[in-house]
Image 1 (cartoon, rainbow, N blue to C red):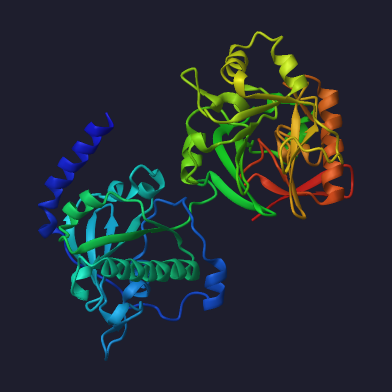
Image 2: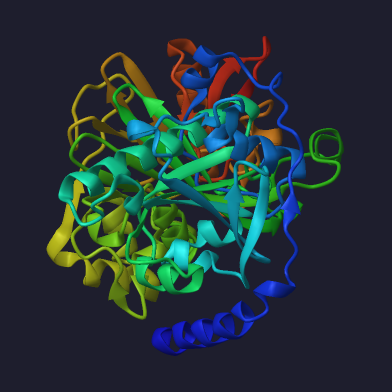
Length: 477
């Protein structure tokens, strides 16, 4: 099926390429050389981003972007913003957009049509975020400008020059607030055909550029925990049902959630120096795999999975068509949670336990303040009530800590000011309330950031007391 779709794409683009002469050149605006942050701030802000809004770049943003990449900054000498070996200016920048492919002409500061059609899939090669971003800039070295195009040194020089232009792009994006990620992945052979490249033209690197996804669009958020990285992997579900809130008065509902609330299910990816670790796996609708893919992590690269509890919205991503999704991962579940679900008539739970039985790691969680690790950098903390073996996980790296607290809360707007409010599907609501109060007091007192499976994006933040019997959650930026 994939081969068929690829053939259809090529046929479509072959047809649309013939209409390139019908495309008009795009005259770019004069670059705004006064905008953006200072150089050191741009270096400080430079980072790769893989979640984009589909909004098209404005003409001014596109103009400034291309001028910064390799536009002419000293017209009296025909010199450009990017240095190149012997000033051969070997890098040509192709602009790949939904409507077609263009070649940037620095002298005229305009885009020359090359081929009509959407060729972003040839840049993406399976990474969906590339197809969403409005622009991909492809750096191609014309090796013949150095003389011997077949010389290994020439190819290395072309690659270095391409990297310089790519860095220009990354820095201007940081300076003017655009999202950007440099990549070497692409279908070079098919791009060469579409762009009519000669044998001496070498595709080097591409930068995917656009506006950052809005908070409504984004499903992946990454934070540092000491030397580790923790990424929220979100699944949006829709509006919640107030009937599941146990003990909330109509006045509370009106005060805290007059317009309802949106249900979100989160998994979290912890990346240490040598391991990729998941905390829960969501519903299993495909969102998890897409989120992992956006971080360049495959299911086969997951080493361990810590389960907070075995409700379906936490173990749903462990299986696909009855088969293990994460073939190399050890599955960590508290002994009490395992004991509970093995006595229940729940096919999903039994299927998961059977599929992962050779990789199953059972443990007894510790208490708040204990130092025993289940895995290097990860401590398990008993937080029963929502289910009998519900477990939170404390991540530690150097002097930094973060608590992944599972389903300690479901409706933050209500349960922060009123931690005594429970959910109808808590297995033991009194115990769930006690666990919630105990953990909230602990993290507030010790200033430990938290991450929750039903906390709205970015789902990571800090807890403080509100001066009464409740708490305030402040999300991390």
